[in-house]
Image (cartoon, rainbow, N blue to C red; front, side, top):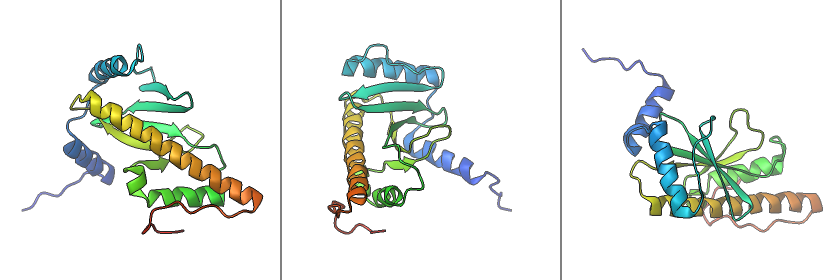
Length: 177
């Protein structure tokens, strides 16, 4: 008789993520990696705070939260996008368009995190392999993607405010909403 899988969808998802990305990483290992990363990028004392988050400011204007969730094989990197009401139609349309442009977000997603007011651009950053060069490169890419989408949202909101048409910058083949 076949054994029935009684795990919840969430438990199955977490198990799949762990299988795909490697073993979950404990807080001491994350802090050791962050210390090495901090030395690599010139940020002293990069470490998790009491809320399991490390903070970086890049280029003086992009704030990154590196969130450690013990069941993941890496860190969730999150940066806030413009603080516009989440029921704003232009804002929501732009976010939905972004979700259909994986080539421009490299798998990053916009999310509403618990107890955080702005919508966040989030990305799973795998760190289990300890590859500082790759992590540095991926963080730089995320900053570029975040700046791009923040600009897209600002442009769309400004076009709505002024009554002008926004320039369509989405890649060919993207689904329009």
